[in-house]
Image (cartoon, rainbow, N blue to C red; front, side, top):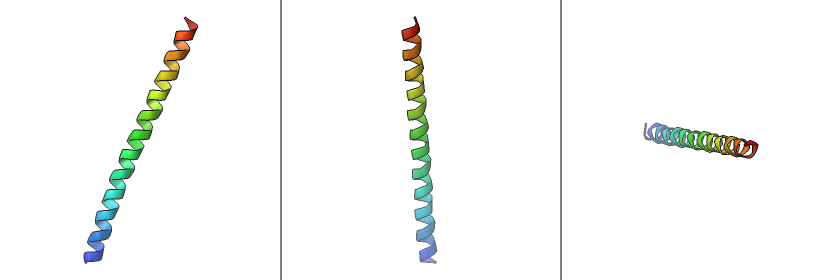
Length: 45
């Protein structure tokens, strides 16, 4: 039973880390897209 509890704890931590990583990557890509769009619009003016 102790082994199952440890595995469950590790899997929860991995899931939390995966969620944080996905959020971080999504935010980085979104900021990069906004940054690129801003520069493209700025040059066209």
